[in-house]
Length: 266
Image (cartoon, rainbow, N blue to C red):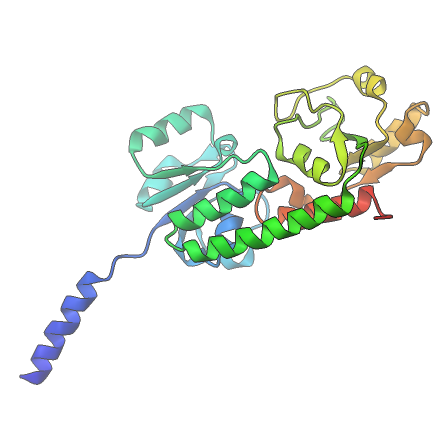
């Protein structure tokens, strides 16, 4: 009889334990945030784009960037979607709204907003203490960078995304804020699009003191315009760290590397 009673009690207790949250991340940066919050165990699906963190190597895929497999997503029965608007097409975003699955939309435009959103995501995951700790660490790192690299007159920087056609980042893009943290100013900060197309003439007119790009050949092409301050002063800088392209906690470390590249004397 005692054994039977114990079994009944254990069964009752187990029925009161809530089922684990089933989370699908619809952007690599958001998947990375979940991993940084030591919550990879909650992910049942991720949208792919490039290499995954090892902690989620075996998590089911729900498609690739811009190509969400809606049927696969529904089969995973998620309780929560983490969405970066740019990672899913407008039509599929409308479909997701009609599904009435709880969705957290993340689109930070500054590194301060990024820290706040990491904290908010941790609350959505039911693990707020982890987000509070991580956000506090990131804010401290950001403050240190701002103080270290602050300039009375910011350096004029052209951040090149691609060359043919010529693309840069607009003022609302988080990379533009990373430049500000480094004591620099995006010469196209007044443009509102995240990745606006610009002309060579517009770059020459703004006469950047530094040109940053992720490809050495693209940087070398600027030597055709020796009148540009960045060319004249030999400030054509290669960024090899792709962390600036993924707005997760690691972006603060990537920003620190960018700052060191732009101002090695600080």
